[in-house]
Length: 431
Image (cartoon, rainbow, N blue to C red; front, side, top):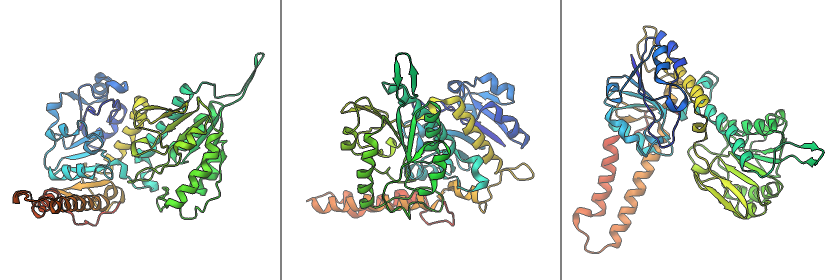
């Protein structure tokens, strides 16, 4: 069994999917590891470290015979350069990586059309046995930590209280929105730096976790009885709830020197929690770090990977903070990936995909030319219907349109194109 570790091609991506320390455990289970030249350089893992650990370091062209390809960002999560990977991938190859299946379902269909078996690490189920493979939690830990450091650098004051001969400096007031993994790590980091921290989450059940880290849990007078799904994630709330939430949250935001937002809903746009008007109510020099900027943002002024100034308030929208701490991020990612890979090995040290296994089943999104995750398939169906519908409207509004561009034919072409790539039927897979 040959495993290939690819060098990341996404602009600015410094992580590597597998570090040298993970190689011996894979070799013990029958894997031979091949690493693309320079794959770990940006994360601090030189080629010689891989060689010393037992891997072979080779040029990209020599990786085509591998059975399994490991990446941080495969096609869906790397829309910029990801298609270049398809040159290495043929029928039956296995790809393990982050691929944004709910945000870029068309990329999953494209992988399926090449006969590639794709595992989406974003889809690791939230069960006890899968905790050691939970890439989202690992990367959120890094992001929460890094977000506080960014805010501390931007803020024109120190975080801790200081009593000196020159006077007393009051501590920074930090407000964390969202008490998931990233939010809890942000709370812990801000507290270590000496700030006074408050936090809010739509799920009242996390109050105890927030308070255990030394922060005050902000309770807004809202009905949050149905705010959490079976997997422990926050659910999407209605427009009336969001509007009232924005109004009440604006008061806390106005009192804060730093606001870090982490609220996200899997597969959906991030909820808008801080309006531009609320930002204008903050003191000049205050800082907002919006970790949901890539999905539309929790803060209205935020823009992905931009530094925006709104009424004297600095609004940051970083989208890839784990890559800014590539060594530890790669270490955590590698451990997650290695554990998942070992789940695919049978007693005879052969690759075996047990589709009845909850972890394998949950993370598998494309297999044998078919998109097998029903959530991804549903998104593809919706996209197909939307495109065909638009084509039909445009055609009806046109006069003297060439028959080769008629709405019926265009709609059929769209449907055929996607149907040729993937089988739209819901294989018994669940997420």
